[in-house]
Length: 317
Image (cartoon, rainbow, N blue to C red; front, side, top):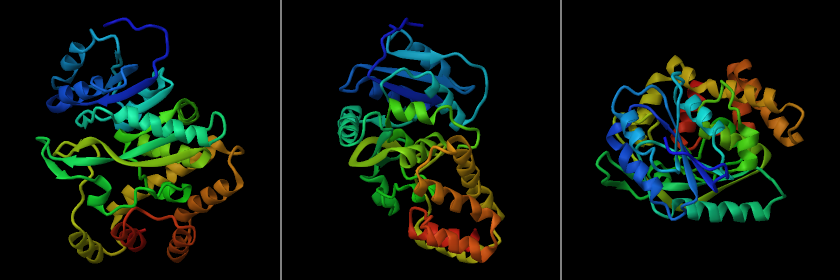
């Protein structure tokens, strides 16, 4: 493996891989081809059984590339968390293994984040995130806007909203060192790395959406977390048919309360009063009766990212 200097790079790109061989080279080349060259790529593989590790090893002659050695199988969220712990950059970006970054992705996100830092107090935790173009497994266009395609408001990033639903695509996030130091290590209850970082940023610092798409977000059968959901009316029919007895929905929904409890445990006594009040209200939802749960969600605007998501939540929670 190539040796790296002790100097901290400007940006660390954290990449968590698992059986990503079909698209990995195209993604790595797009990261290494960024207009900002002062970067490192910190990669942790999670026990791939395809050609992923061989592909990663072929990039180790580049001094900007760091492949971590670890035999543990952690899953996507913890894999990202472990790799992020090793990042040395003044700023940290997260990379999926199957996208294609546009050449000015990091430069434009950095410009926006530095402006956000200039508008805030010194050492304020801060992050930006962007839109993305949706493409299929071949790289052919599906839609020019991830948020537009799904009918989501990309600026729904206040703390009450982020408690209930992550809005930032992890592969578009750029975080400053103050946020990285505050968010890490990620708790076991963190649903995903991007959700946890957005929650910490919304609770303690600044978070801003940048409208321009920064990458091609590839959709294929092996996405760990995909962006495509069924169209509105089929989902609505399914929600009406399944009613409030859908235990599968609750199994997927309730981990966000565990994540909120982990946030409260980590930051108890250091939160602003309004943040603490919202967190307490959210954490009481699963312990309340059916009517009270719905009142709490609506009163504090603990809402998800689309109309159909909210209909589904209020029916099934």
